[in-house]
Length: 171
Ligand code: 4NP
Image 1 (cartoon, helix red, strand yellow):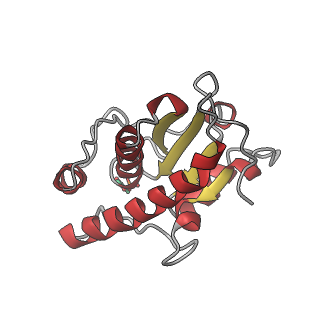
Image 2: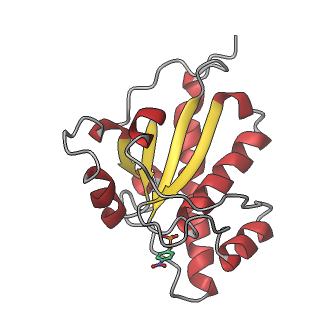
């Protein structure tokens, strides 16, 4: 299930790409939370963290203003610029985390030989509260939806880091 994890070293950091539709709400928030937690734990050399969207609607844009506001309230600064997910990302990343079933379907469609399936998972595979549920798109809803998304992403990212941490070789 979980992709095979090699020893994570400074020379060979673990690379994670969070993916949603627009790359302006959910995946930049997940990226920002993971970078924040990695920084807090002094694990920066061991991780490379990025995000992308399956659609190109918002390429080049900063994260959604409400996403940034909610994240900032939790001490997380979202710095990303939207980009579209590319099939090259299958080679680049060790783990590709889709925010919902639709994102998962879109990502898998970019890998017709089905060679990368082991690297692709749902973000909430790491959410013990509701395993493999969708991270709902907050874009068209109110502020409460953004808070709800932040909370489930924070839980999931914390669990992801705790499952990866034993694979870090600090020597
Ligand atoms: P995201 O949210 O996938 O979490 O970045 C969305 C942002 C924009 C759109 C859809 C979802 N849109 O259709 O423009």
